[in-house]
Amino acid sequence: MSLRSAHSYYNSHKRKQRGLLFVCAAVFAIVILSLALFVVSANRSVKKYKDLTRLWKNGEYKEVYDESGLRLEEKPLDFFLLSMRGYSAFQLAVAQINNQDMQMYGDESIAALRKALLQKSGERSGRVHYVLGKAYFLKGADYANQAIKYLEEAVSLSYRAEDIPEYLGLAYAELGDYRKSVEAFSEALSPADKDDTNEAPSDILLLAIARSYFEMGEADSSRAYLIQCIDISKDFTVQASALLMLGKALMKEGDIEGAEQQYLRVLREGGERADARYELGVLYAARGENTKARAEWRKVLRLDPAYTPAIARLTM
Image (cartoon, rainbow, N blue to C red; front, side, top):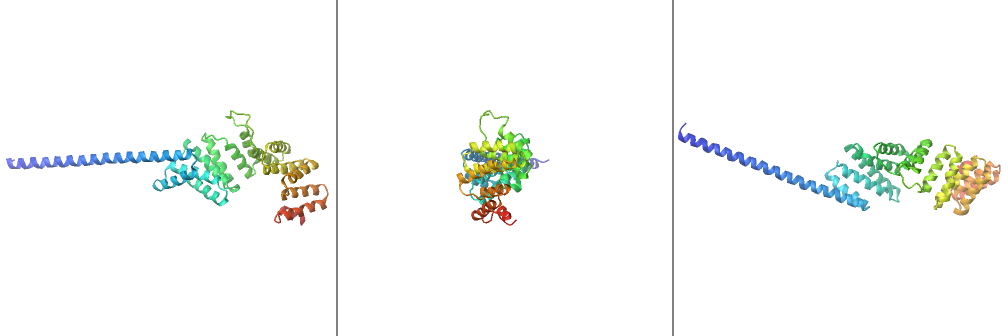
């Protein structure tokens, strides 16, 4: 090789080396920049998650609902964002007075939580199953099966919440499975991990247990819970329901006078009520006082012209 050719080859080789170094430097810079952007993005995501958690702890559910909705536009399959959207939507649903608004938030909660379950399984989804079960219960009796399915799945995933047995009891009662309803309610009355065993059950819980026993035909057990409910309740709406059911239980036992006292107490303390008047009519008919019975049912229709049982009795 001539001197000139060698010099040319050397220069060409140096240019290739410089080019290769330049490419390596560029690639290295891009990698560093990408890592930096990833870290910044991750830090921003962590900050956003912390902000949502703080809002949730402060009870600012509407803010959590709105913010998680915005973030989901960027990350539509993010488990945390879907969960927070579902949890906040449920909280907003139970706070609504208008049934349409309650159903709207309830449906949003269900949609978000079902998507979340597609992204994550196992223990981390226990809370998702729990809230999803309650959201289905909120939709009404037609969704009791779904409520039971997700609540029991939450239990199987070792998720603990004191109100799960109560919700299960109510859901089973909606399905007419009163035996399982009573089993769940019994657990709600005496959870194994509750330290304060002197805490009194709520009047609503006692009424629900009494109704399940009543539907199973166990009048004695039903009556015991009804009396306890009436004694502790400060809400006359609950008391009236318990008094009317107690009257029916006493009727089944043949204590017609005792039943009449319950119905008259409802009218005396709560004013005119179609349901109490109707039950009085049933009582009088059972006692053979048909004229008094029909008079009571006519009073029912003056209070509520669409009261179907009274209409049926008067057209017999």
